[in-house]
Length: 307
Ligand SMILES: Cc1cc2nc3c(=O)[nH]c(=O)nc-3n(C[C@H](O)[C@H](O)[C@H](O)COP(=O)(O)OP(=O)(O)OC[C@H]3O[C@@H](n4cnc5c(N)ncnc54)[C@H](O)[C@@H]3O)c2cc1C
Image (cartoon, rainbow, N blue to C red; front, side, top):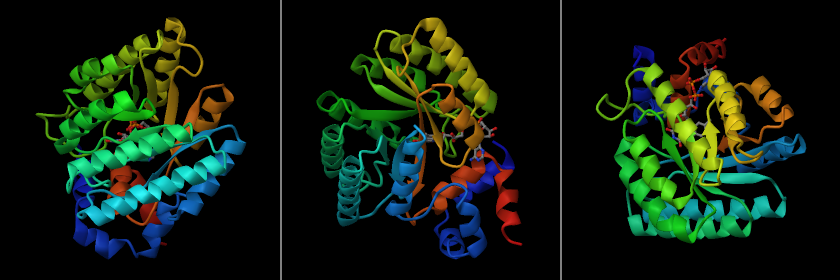
């Protein structure tokens, strides 16, 4: 891992830094590149704009590792309200949630009940509820919860991280459920025992996992979503999907708001099913540091906002 990436990922875990920096105007200005605003209304307005251009969206409220049952309950209720608003506005919008935001650290049963309630509501709104994958301390608990809930709620999808050495095995087990899987490279600081330290190994792992998912998608054995901005990878996935005869809509690309926007427009114009993941909320510090770590050159963009 490069020193700058390592530093930024360490910063993402510092509550002291978060407290000192979140009010700084230059950082808030730079943040606007990655999120339309802190409020749900900002995200819904952006989603409405994308919908008008034929592009779907995924909404997520920033936040993780809540420390009380009451906080987790408030997050669940917030998302139930979001689903209602999405349905009322007829938006082509999915939701993505973090289990530690729904209280995984505090009360696992209550967290599972919250996921069940949200998945049922998502199905009612004819949309998909995605579970993010957090750092590797949570991988087993996240997979367990998904395996338990998914048979009752086909509208539930799960994120898997290509940088984890275990993911090939996890995917094979999950395929029995004909699941919706969002494949990403992985955004957290992980040791070499659990994750590939070299980017090229993560990229190779992503290619292999994507190929496996497409094989399954060719006979509706999986619903893959490729969460990446790596255009070389995207080109290869499209070629592979065409060669395997995966039907249109049999897979999707999901990209983050504000990243590679010209490529997003081009993919949509070329008929690919594309969604843009829009984040909102005030707890953006850790998430924003992870975005900077993905491309440390982004730090220059932040510094430019100082002047
Ligand atoms: C829809 C979606 C959901 C995600 N969910 C999760 C999750 O649940 N768990 C998790 O661990 N990770 C998640 N991630 C983040 C993911 O793991 C990667 O950290 C992130 O997508 C960067 O990897 P990449 O595939 O774009 O490839 P990279 O090889 O890192 O980047 C490819 C190119 O994309 C551009 N790019 C990538 N990131 C940035 C950036 N931050 N700023 C500017 N340009 C950039 C650059 O041009 C770069 O050269 C998600 C990503 C997406 C798109």
